[in-house]
Length: 397
Image (cartoon, rainbow, N blue to C red; front, top):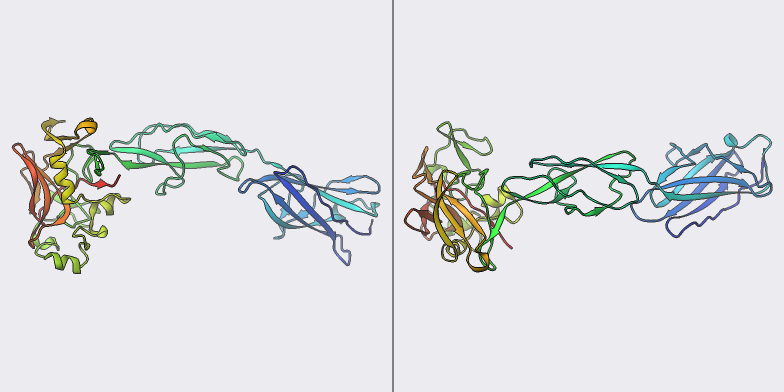
C-alpha cells in the first residue's frame, strides 16, 4: 500500500448543519490519519455524522470503519450522533485500505444530517390525581405537550418541571423539541402545583383557599403558636407535630418562645423585621409553602374584614364564614372555618369561633394580632401568643 500523503479536505453542506474536515497522515507514516473536524448547527441538536475517504486519482471510495475518538473509544464513521463543536479523531487507514491501494492523493469528506430518532415523555402527577398517557416525539421536530389532565384538590396547575421538587420549566401545552439526546429515552416531566388562591379586592393580596395543613377549605389544618413554623394537629387526644418531632405537645407559655417578649426584644432576636412583621424564617406560610407565601399583615386582615361581605353558613357540616369580594370581585370568595383555638392539651370553642394569626405583634409583650369571628361578629384583636391558631396564608399579586 502506498500513500504519499493525505490532503486537507473541506466539505460545506447546508448552512445548518455544516461540517469542515481536515485529514492528515502521521509522520513518520504509521498507518494512522488524524481527523480534525468542526460541526456547526443548532445548539443542543445532535447530527448524524459520517465520513468518506476517496482516492482522487482513481476515483475510488473507501469505507472508513476503524476510527477512534480522542479518548480511544471506537467511533461510528457511518452514523455517529454528535453535537456542534470541534473534534479530534484518528483513522487507522491500514486496517481499512486494501494491500494494493495506491493513493497519490486522497481526500476525506464529511456529512452531517439531523438525527431524527424517537423518544417519549412521561407525565407524573406529582401529588395530583388522574392519568396521562406517554407522548411520543421525534428528535428535531417541535410538538406541543399534551394538555394537563391531572387535578389536585386545593391546588392549581402551574406547568411542568424536570424533577419532582424542581421549578417550572415548561408551560401547559408548550411546544417543545429535542428534550433528550438519547434514542428511545423516556423523559420524565413532573406537574408543578401551587396552592389555590383568590383576590378579594383591587390591588389586594391573594388569599389561600384553605389553611396550612388542611385538605379542604372546611378543615382546620395545623395550629401554630405565634412565630411557630412547625404546626400541630390534634390526633388521638394529643398534639402531634407536623414534622414528627413531638407527639405530645402542649400549648402553654413555656413552649412559645415569643411569649413575654417586647417588640424591641423580638427585633433584636430576629423574630420580626424592622417593619414589625415576622421574619421569613419565622413565618410558617413562607417556611412551609415557600415561594412568596406569607402570613397576612394586620392591615390586610382589617381590609379582609371591611372590604368583603361576610356570610355565616354551614359548609360540609362545618360552621364558619364565606368571605366574598365586592363589585368586580363578588364571585371570588374563601371559607373560614370556626376551628376554635388550641390551649394546653385541647381545642377550645371549636364550631363557635375562629381566628387566624397575622404576622404582626401587638404593643404588649404577650399578644399578637389576629382576625377573629363568631356567630355574632368578626374583626381584629389581640390574642395570646402561646395559644394555637390556624394560619391562612396570602401572597402578593
